[in-house]
Image (cartoon, rainbow, N blue to C red; front, top):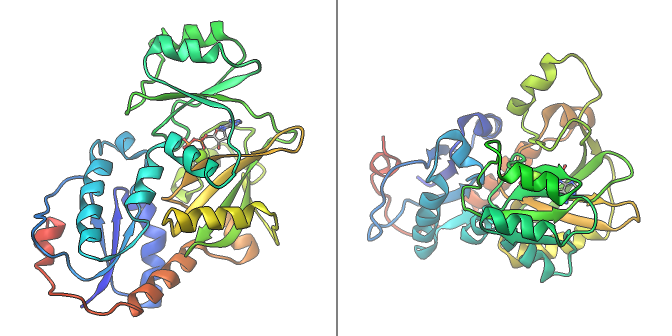
Length: 320
Ligand SMILES: Nc1ncnc2c1ncn2[C@@H]1O[C@H](COP(=O)(O)OP(=O)(O)O)[C@@H](O)[C@H]1O
Ligand SMILES: [Mg+2]
């Protein structure tokens, strides 16, 4: 029987999707891709494969999960399997410079950014900025290595201190800091390549902006504050069409794209999350469910599948 395969490396992040799939009665299985083996001469099982591999997987002890996922996706795609967020999406997920290059190809503006390898190069790159700048990891997620600097001296101290966080792929980005008149960024969610909703994220408490409910525990223990995530009802903006074209051209089906608007009203896009999570409180307030939309989309994809080959021994492939 064909089913939905959720490729991932974080059980907590799959829970909301599992609940939605179960309540809709769609057959699915989770495929935890940190270790395992695939024999590429074998035929993969039939089904819809949803890739939720995360750029920050190495921070949860899954150092090679993204690399292994690239192998698995190549195998699935070579056999013509239906993959949601296939290889191209994974490539962009783990490489911000590749994201920016792809955005530029669609006329989408990103902040001035220099990629630097080596601590001296990071400092030299910073010398090319006139205003405040931030560092971030090329393979990032959850605000990895994001720090704001107002001078090259301050950066120099940071990179030569024990507190310097070396990026997992060796590439640090130095990027113009876009000062927003109000402390918020906007994240625009897409499912099936189509705009779903935009969420405003308050940035006054820092750069780590994971929207998943499991990321909000610390915040709650600090007592009630203003909600950090709020869905903008009826969000309309010309950037939406551009994003949709960009997603189509890059074979990305599900994503959250982040932008910030600077003081002079210019919009800068700076992050594409192909493994996107949603904030349930923000969703409840307006009666919408991102994971519900994904579950329905995956169900439609499954219904559209024709059987294309023999099913293999699934337990061997899934490593259990
Ligand atoms: N160029 C920038 N100017 C201002 N704030 C930024 C900029 N880049 C990132 N940030 C802030 O840092 C957060 C994390 O950066 P981001 O590029 O999204 O990295 P990650 O992939 O780790 O989420 C953003 O959501 C935003 O609040
Ligand atoms: Mg981000």
